Amino acid sequence: MFQVASRPAHHHGAIPEPLNLSMSHYQSPVAQKLNIPRRLARPSFSEPTRDAVARIDPALTGVPFEYIRKTLAGNSNQMIAALSLLTIPSSLPCAHLPPTLDAPIRPTSQMPDPSAFPTLILAILSSRSSSATPTVASFADKSSLPASATLPLYPASALVLASHCSLLPPLPKALPSNGRRAALTLPIVPLTIPSPETFHLLHAYLHTMRPDTLLASLLPALATSLPQMPSASASAGSNKLVYVAQFSSERLLRLAHALAGAAFQRGGTQGAMNALMAHIKVINGLWQNVCALGVFDSELWGVMDLAWEVVLTAMTKVVENGKA
Image (cartoon, rainbow, N blue to C red; front, side):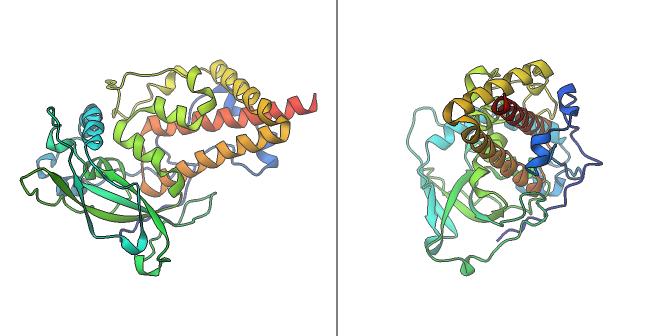
């Protein structure tokens, strides 16, 4: 099983930088009272190793990471199309977890490029680290898990993971093709992370590089109010704040008030706070996984910062409304 060496979170030496928003400088009394961090801490920056990428594709030796990431982001639609042709279970019992899985390929007149297909399947386990500081991302041997445990499966591209996740150990090479292309034989890689229940968010983001989709998933009640970006944006994979840069302090405040209003309508002050705490837990889980795997994409961190800010401000608004 793979072991992810997580690092303690530090506020200094952090890349990317926090959002520079004037509304984020005040101290939230609600956050202090509920013991919620005012900001999402950032671990010390680290870049994925070139050896990890070259091991998967020797032709990429010496190629800049930004070029690799932008190329992968540009191929995201092909990856989605390729994945839609595969038959892969969403989960498997731990007792029946094989080393590899044969995924049948549905015939089509427009077969995606072979490089668009996933090269492995991640079987996700939980490390149950602290929700405050993801310093531990250890792996449990499969034999030590209850036989009844069911592990979610995520088809993934080893190149996508290796080019974004600086703390991920070397991934297995793709198994040789049988030439028939009627099925793919994919290695199953058990990977332990702090928050399995939110891994789908990070998995989807790394393979599509869609900050708009991620933000809508973190703040579903506001999905129709959020700007969208083209599926093949030229900025995708560039590690620059492009999508998040659209949000002014005033716009974030309007979103926070809309989120507070939507939450309050569903259950009054207490129901609203419970709903907003559920948002906090999801964002925190995503943050734990990002830290544990060593992902330093600027748009990803920007979206997490933005969502965190909106939810904390919404919580303050709910409390204020409850006192009125």
